[in-house]
Length: 107
Image: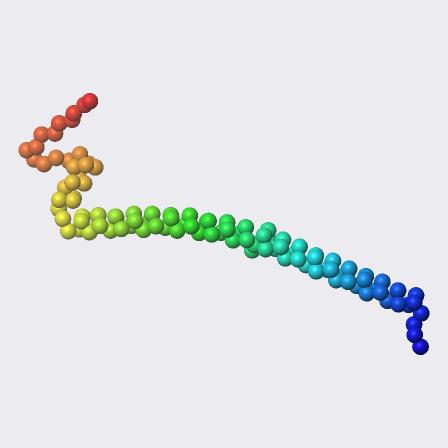
């Protein structure tokens, strides 16, 4: 026996309601995923911020490594050469050798 037209209309309306609910749910999930991607705790913007911070830290580390290299060279020079010790004593402590005359030139 065939269903009356009214039942077919109700079935069609129920199908349309489920379709709308499904579309709304998919849309809500899409919005939530986009929110998480762009603005979430581990999202795109947070990643960019962390990458910039990592780059700044790398630059600081590179500078410190260069300073370490310079200090190592200076330490080796002080261990093995008296000229470096003498130069430092003259520049930093104002020391002079016996028999030398110290002059200060004032501009």
